[in-house]
Length: 280
Image: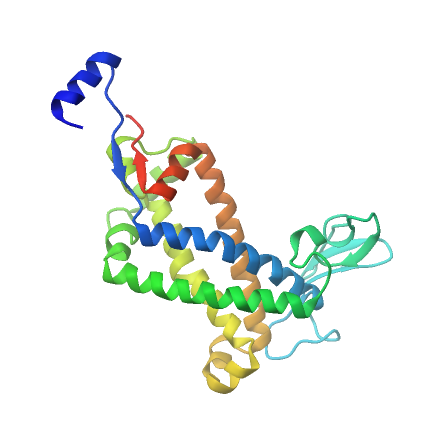
């Protein structure tokens, strides 16, 4: 808009026109959209795979008679989730639930959370592995672009000043009061966003990919160092599950923040790249 047009707009409306900035570049928007599909399919098919043996172990070996640090199952009394020595009744949600036909089923995760909805380990593995390669390839390309374009160092890595305890505590307090950045401060990520994004991009997602490869017998033969890195296939399976769970928690918090900050503006910025800066 020209300066004259801007003055006319202000005179007609009696207020400043909104400031529109280009917030997300095309590679970021494409990768974000692809991950919406790939992560959903991988998580749901992964739960079907987990249902085949709903126990997690540390070390190289794991079988029914071995000690599991996490287990989802059912007794005659009902379903349960057991973590270490802590056991929680989960009847109706985990371990024992009712399917769409009204029949009681004894299985870790319910049909509405899995792909396919009926238990089929072979089909679930096909879905999971197909989308895993799409996910791993997208992560590698996005990582290379982030480094080459300086997106990682310029936009995502927090500065030393931002990591100061007083600054971090201030941002935590502002988020706890639902006071989100406005004006020029909203043009860039705050320190909590940077820390969470870097944690997901640099730690959780690579861990998911590498532990997934570690669980493959073919990769064990090609890259045996992965078994040493994660302490065995069962430890890799546990880390894979933990990292995926943390990604789900991140997504839930991320969606909640988008809704609270203004979903129309946030979604528009991720679809078109154009973001309206909230006024001071």
